[in-house]
Image (cartoon, rainbow, N blue to C red; front, side):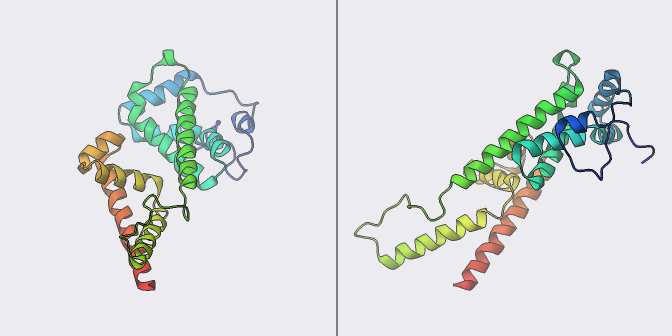
Length: 216
């Protein structure tokens, strides 16, 4: 790994405030903006070592910002990786006229964190034991309605086991009737990532639903 980067605080410390992370050691000179730009240019050219160097320099401030928005460490860790995946894909779009490299990365982090927070809040608003949209009619038999409610509850429980990425990929594929490649294009993700998310998500759904069937 070599000598530690001057911008990266001691990893044994807690994230602290964003200011503490940004200015952890003010006695050390800041890295010139030209070096940040050079790293982004190298990432745009497909240099994975440059991406690693960029991650080592910036991941703590990205994580701290996301943690403050989502208030969930596991979520912050996941979204931080998503941000640097975005950096890898969008490095060629960076323009110096748009601002500093750190500002560019932090804007992506803020956008990702807010999107994830809204997604999680929408999940919490979905009623688990609320009224069903299809009321009982005189033609419905009580036992059929009970079975229907149990199936709906089982599906809700199963969906809760999926990650946001798995759920989004599955919903996009099946509700829009798209192929893997079409889902990847719509979500701006690699085809391999989409295949993994859909297959993993479907396996989780099958396992949870099968366990529910055995319990009944």
